[in-house]
Image (tube, rainbow, N blue to C red; front, side, top):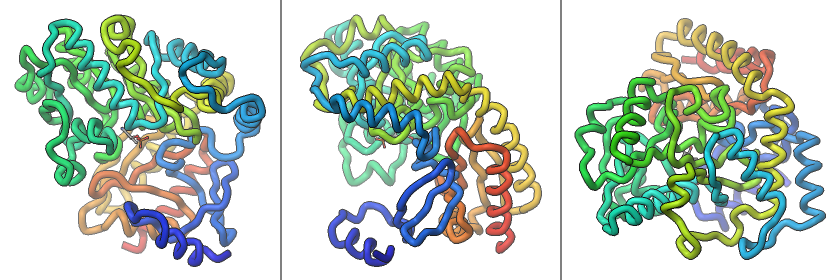
Length: 399
Ligand SMILES: *Cc1c(COP(=O)(O)O)cnc(C)c1O
């Protein structure tokens, strides 16, 4: 069946909440994707920073198939082995103590915010606590996650949103200090802002926020949904700073394609926050998701994915710097590891650039208003960086 006929059927039955590119994906292999017409594309988007191991990894697939044959769902009224293995491995790589598995990043944020509120409630018995979040942030689309998302366009139609949330300016420590009062229970931020346009936290900012949190027993919630799981060359982006979150939210690459998220907390939060009856999920941490997380973490370790990311990302940064120098309308390169952005002059629309890249067989996504976002599978090699740079120059040369 032709792509246009699939697209016609999609638009007749699927709620139109995305302006999708006119492509129907068929399958993937390594770091390449194929559409239903047989055209091959180099993938520098990874399904929005999800497919860290690329497509068709044999070991990963075998683990999932094996689990499917045994059992894929049990509910949380009982224990299951893959969930236990996965939780233990997440604690080992994060140095945090307790995991709650969710089905998405949004739910991981919801849970993290609930845990912070319950922690504050346990301490003083009141419920009017405040949360400080950042402008230009993205934490998800549910009402709770939207309440801490600093983007007026996403929020406005759904206001009033739950909770008392105050917005500071990202990377501006003074703006955070100004909002702190006796009611502040948590500060939430992305270690590297993703959707907002690839802005890494400065050391001064993140370590400053961490210091304030420590001093005043305010919980630091780090959203590692996009920047975590090895993308920056550290298992979690915060591990490159002198900080440690009280609660961390993960998702995206955590299951490398199986829908799974988690919020992970320090022991002191676990002891004084969510208790039986306070939170739950039917699917969360089911054996299929657990098997995926567990195998992904094994593969990261066995194949030394983090050192690979550090090596290849230096080369990517060099190539992107070269592109920046060659085209006057490329204003800045930002990012850490394999989470990079090129900010373009407003005169060159990034949406159009990403559409033209697709024509050249390159999958590239955008972020913020005018940023090209590079979040490839973590297994890319230098040859793929060269191929990407060649195709991208072919597109940028048209401007
Ligand atoms: C994608 C994303 C989310 C939301 O995750 P979903 O799985 O889409 O619900 C939250 N925070 C950040 C930083 C993200 O990149």
